[in-house]
Length: 270
Image (cartoon, rainbow, N blue to C red):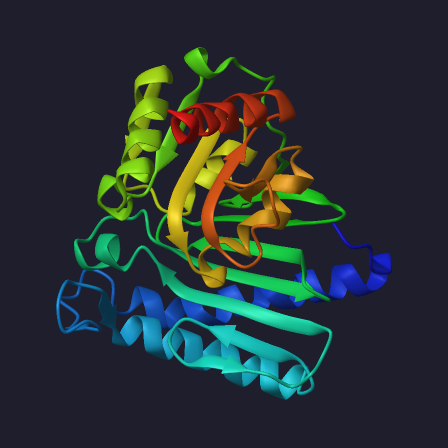
């Protein structure tokens, strides 16, 4: 994690948390209210609602007012490149399918990169009243007035680990399908359709592994500082930085990370 002065990090994290709070009315007023759903795709289904758009609009306005020189990358309104070392990365509703089904597993993701490294991250679930956040100062979860520091749990072997992934449908090639199936069979249990929650629960010591394919930066940037500050590891399947998205795996330890990537290498060689 790229180091910034402690006071600057604290101010940026406080602002990120304020963005999450500012977006809450736009989200909660539309959740379980039969919100209209648009489809971004001509074939297939990629839903978007006014909750996505209006929550991102509110956050963008606050960023432009408070840090006008900072860049912004959001799922709904694209990339505003200012040439700054700082870029805010926003996913106003991560898990829109869950949102439109009335499931409280969607979240708002707010990340900040500095010179290409994720330095601040917030994952907010306002309906549940739970927010996870992280920076170089640590990872924390605040729930109904109580805040606790997060830490990954002691490493489990892959065969004893608990894992999660958003959807089997997101794995497209034969190799990708073989990899997730082998991981699923090896783990003690693997859950699906938890979206960003899986990554934060891993940071909280409840799970051991989270993985996905074809992530966008706004799907993962906010989660990286939370995971890393809690003692976990998050990379692409090739072991590179996950800031740019792609095929991502996060684990509670270096040993578990190596074991999971070795499964992929054996599939690639077979």
